[in-house]
Image (cartoon, rainbow over all chains, first blue to last red; front, side, top):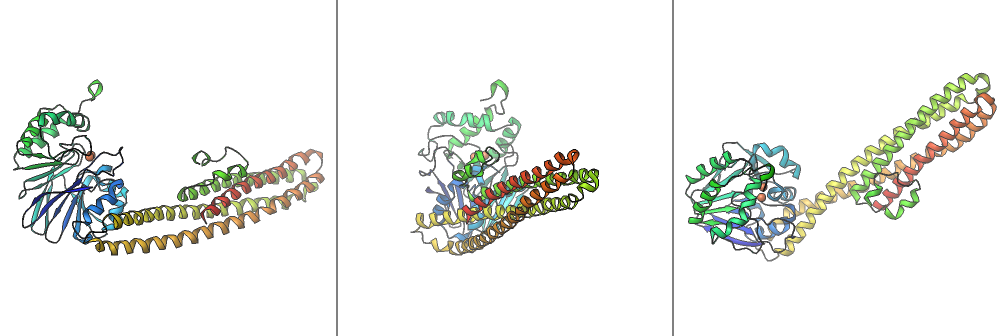
Length: 247
Length: 217
Ligand SMILES: [Fe+2]
Ligand SMILES: [Fe+2]
C-alpha cells in the first residue's frame, strides 16, 4: 500500500492510500483518503476487508490509532466499507459518517463499538478541529444514498465512484491525457450509474465548486483542466442504459 | 466436506469419519441439523407409542402387559425430544460463540500483520490498547467455546445412555406381543421394530454429533 500526500497547509493534510501491490488480483483496486487535522483524522472509504491490514499498517505510519476519530463511508459497497468489523475492533471509539439510508445495511459488516452518524439526504458538514468538510449529495451515482466530501480550503473533492476508472494497480496517480483516459471510465460510468437526471444534477452542483483535485475511489485523480474535461464528458455521457444497450 | 452437511447420503456414520473435519463454526450447525433429524424421528416414535396404545387396548386383557410399555415408549420419545431441543439450543449457542471467535481470531491475525508491516511506525504502540481488548475478548470467547463444547458432549452422552433403554424396551415389547394373540401380534411386533429402528437412527445421529464434537475439543 502506497501513501501519497495530496495537500498540506498549517491546519490539515490530505493523504491518499492505494496502489496496493499485495492486493489479490480479483479485487478491484481502491483509493482511500484521509484528512489529518491537529488532533483528529477522518478516514474516507476505508475499503474492503481484504485490504484491512495493509490499510491499518499504512495509516498507523502516519497517525496514532486514537487520532482516527472519524470514518466516512460514501455508500454501502463492500469495496468501501466491508472492513468495518475490523475497524470496529481497532478504533472502538470512532464515529462512522454515512448516508442514513444505509445504516441498517452497513451494520451487517459488524459494528459493536463504533458510533453511526447518519448523513441526511441534503448533505451537511463535519468539522474536525478547525477544518470544515462538506458532504455533497451524489445520490444514484451510483448508490441510491451517496455523498462526496468537499474541502473548500484544499479545493479537493473526494468523489467516490464518480470519475472512477478500471485500470492496473500500478497506474499513475494523476490523469495525464484525458482522451486516453476515457476508455477506462466509460463502461464503469454507463453500467454502474443508473440515472441521467441524478448525474446532471450532480454536474450542476459540482460546477459551482472551486476544485483543484477531483479524487475518485478507483483509478486516477483529476487535476486542473482535466476536472472540467471530466465534468463535460460526464454531462454528455448517456448512463443507465438497459436492454440491448447494456454496456 | 460440504456435501455431507445435509446428512443422509450414507446411513453408516463410520463412513463419514474421514470427512468430519468441519470448520469449527460449521460444525455446530452440523450438530444442530443432526439433532433436528433426531427430533423428527423421536416425534414419529411418540406416534408409534399412541398407535401401540390403541392396538393394545383393542387386544384387551391379552395385551395388558403391553400397555405400560407404551408409556415407556412415550417417555423415551419425550426424553429424546426434550434433550434434542436442549442440545440444539446448545449447538446454536456454540455456533454463535464460534462465529464471534472466528471474528476475534481474525482481528488478532490482522493486528499481528499490522504489527509486522508497520513495525517501524512511530505510532505502532497506539494500537496496544485495542489489541489488548481484542485479546481479552478472544480469551473470553475461547473459554466460553470450551465450556459450551463440554456441555454439549455431556448432553449427547446423557441422551445416548437414555437410548440404551430402547433395546430393552423393544425386547420386552416382543415378549408381550407374542402373548397378545395372532390378531394383534404382528402389529405389536411392528411397534417393537419401530422402537428399535428409531432408537438406532437417533443413536447414529448422536454418534455422528459426538464425533464432530470430539474434533472440536
Ligand atoms: Fe460503489
Ligand atoms: Fe467503488
